[in-house]
Length: 132
Image 1 (tube, rainbow, N blue to C red):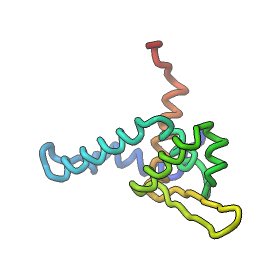
Image 2 (cartoon, one colour):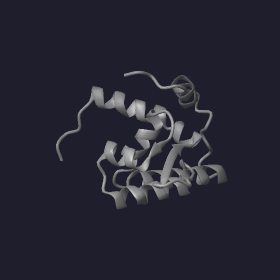
Image 3 (cartoon, helix red, strand yellow):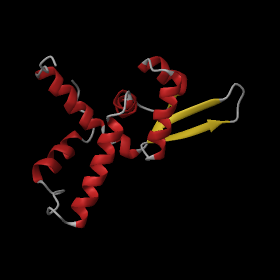
């Protein structure tokens, strides 16, 4: 598995614990709320699959490209794209063309998730989950 850009910086930050906040601090509370919101969003059906397309890809994707790549019902895909756009992980650009064309692109926040997906991939190569 190819290491993504910024993975080394990601590892150093984790190991240095520079981002740790004292428990109970305002910053720790804000970080906990952000983490909770992110995990709730990622826990929605197909969100991780959609974000993975952007975090590991290069450049914008059309709705139809995403629909084909991730095999998701159009209404679900539309809802997830709206949610990801609303929280600033994706941008949406509509072109005044016929037929209409809409492209979605990852923001820096979404691209910074690439090491997370890389590490999840490494983990899945090493381990299996026990059947539920």
